[in-house]
Image 1 (cartoon, rainbow, N blue to C red):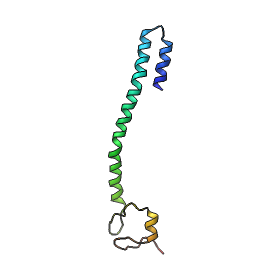
Image 2 (cartoon, rainbow, N blue to C red):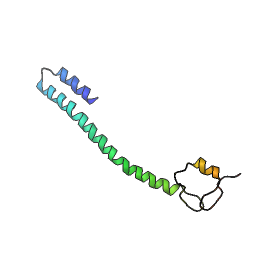
Image 3 (cartoon, one colour):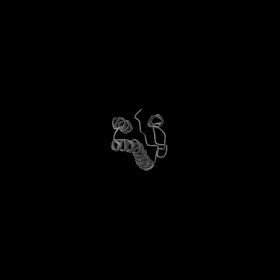
Length: 93
């Protein structure tokens, strides 16, 4: 969008070198700033993913013994009806 604005200003300011300079600056700088901000945001993602993984591993445990239940979805664990480590029953039959 800033590039379109810069080109529009450039066409409107054909007679003015100042307006042409401003439009050229907008056309060149806007994508560079967008790329920089996108890269900065992408750099945060691995850290956030690591934090989420640690939090998941703390919470996805057997309520009785605290054993981490691994990457298995709850519906598969519920079908087994008990904790693989301490054999605590999870589902009423």
